[in-house]
Length: 474
Image: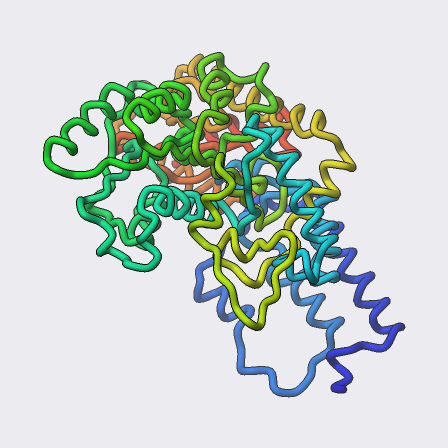
């Protein structure tokens, strides 16, 4: 056995202590929100020739702390507002390390009954939190893209049961999938991968709040049927990536039932916000409360449930549909009472459920609901500040979830677009706050997405001060 691969107990103790210290430093939330460099600088710092001979593990851990950890956008910082990627609950981060040490491949209950039981338990808890039918089925995934893919594959299997064998020959007419103009970019990839064709993805008009319009959907369905096409699925979005808009899920569900279409809801961002119903705007709460009417739902615990990457979830109302899409057998893979390899693509699956199981049991759902409510109210606070400040302007309506888009626009300034783009980059390089650059209605905006356990109200106020200072800079 090569010694560097199995350190002796004393050396392992030292390495574990150093790794624990590095983890503790990250979870403290101290340090810069961002220290961005160019990719060339990054490659120069971490690259080098193939390491053939062993190095010193202690020194390698020190190098992580020096050349990797302090760089890039750190979502452990209380003013990380860059993306819909949450700061992770510390206990879940530690659980991830335990899961890696256990190194269980959660594929079948025949060989991993305890790990499978943990995942099935967690899936039941998540269904309850999302208010989905208790008799549905689900599977944990790498994230929202995989979850959406599995759900839409289930939809395809339900509508075109011969597709797995016959491929495109099973399609007698063009299969049409509908989504709003705010649909996440992953869905175009998904319809292409599923063999449905991106030209059969219809983007439906939205209302002033950027939600899909049921009347426009109805018209699009009628138009496609008149052309001889075959509408079969609608993708609603419960939390768009740009502004956090929530499509009218209940209204779309009723329309889909009437028209005989599958309703899938991409709730990767917004699904778990229903836990903080009292902090949601009334319409958003009503729409999220209707998730149980969908045929399938994708959700991301690594977004608004504060889990570390990776952790998504796919749910279907009829438990037979995932099996219809993915069931397969092999001589080398004996099955058990529950086989996750028959409900999804992967035959190598990380023990993702452990961090959820530990975090939910340790903190309780009420703690997560309170954190979500706090982030929702902080986005509302930022929107109110921007609306009242004469030098700022809101770029979208009041937030339905936790994204606020606004602009620095002092009266009489002539270079507003260029100035806002400059403000965003200045904040990203400055290290005191991180926001994302986005374009809304063709104009650059400052996009703050608050999905952060560590954010306080004063951090929101600090962001406004930083925006003002960057805007006033020559």
